[in-house]
Length: 397
Image 1 (cartoon, one colour):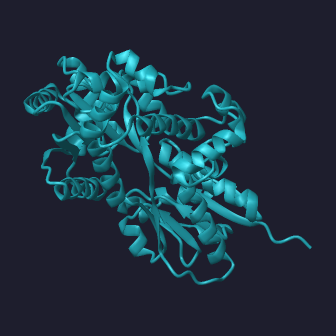
Image 2 (cartoon, helix red, strand yellow; image 1 turned 60 degrees about the vertical axis):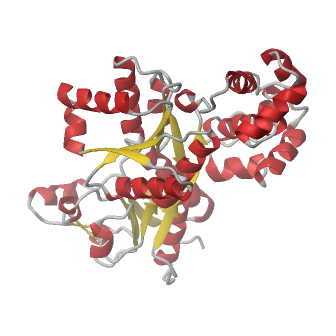
Image 3 (cartoon, one colour; image 1 turned 45 degrees about the vertical axis):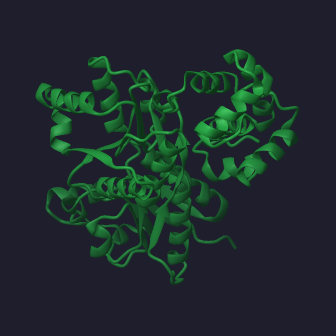
């Protein structure tokens, strides 16, 4: 006899990358483990109750569970879970109101990752552009500032409000431009999210500020389409919202089956910095090193030898190796491996190209060769990495 089909309500907007990828994770879990009927549509007769100032009681509509992102208190008052097993995506007042598990970004880890990324690229001038009044922005700001402070670096700060950002007046644009112009160069700026990062690139373009040579800009959320619509394209911290959706569904499954859970928080951890054009630079005051790094980046999808790099920059292999060690703290081989591993990661996360084809495109002999190489660099196989982090519905291997 087959198990009873559970009705699960997903109340999450798919208008942004978080909601879209989070929902993908829920769907994946339900296909693998659940006998679930998923829906994102509230029954029409319940919708009408909101116009009568009556809350929507999901349990009365026959739902067995729900995963919801309720953006504000007013919206929360329109929905009642009344003992229904549920998960709230993102920390809001509603998670306390209903005493239900919630999901939140690990903003401390995001700030630390951004600080380490800029430090690895030699930046000593750092700034943060964020929102006042949003907890998530403040947490990212504080983590970034504290991480920079730990390595004896100070952080410049520019905060705006949601209302001011949305209006985008000429006065505000000029104020932000003046701040950017006064910053010491080269400067690395972490934006609290991709929307802010895109705004920074636009302001720089309008005021002839070079990105990334004058100001390197890093966003957060990795809105793949938005990040690639700008010129230059925006680098961004990606995080595993799809994995969080999978975990939320797993937790909901336990709740619907009557099990108690040991935790009420799921952290969405950052995966890595997706390094696009807006940060594709090292803050090193040496033209030879910069030229060598550019050569490595440009040719990272083919087998590159140290002699090729030395010839390209017109320096002996031995002297170039010394410069790399003294100015970057790494060998030339390390820089090559870093660039090639970054290419593999991006193709695993951002495409559904089979690993055999990725191997061919990047100059590896076959899938087993690229798998061994990637595991040495990351301690995980390409298949495991793609399964864990990819946001694509098709995960060809």
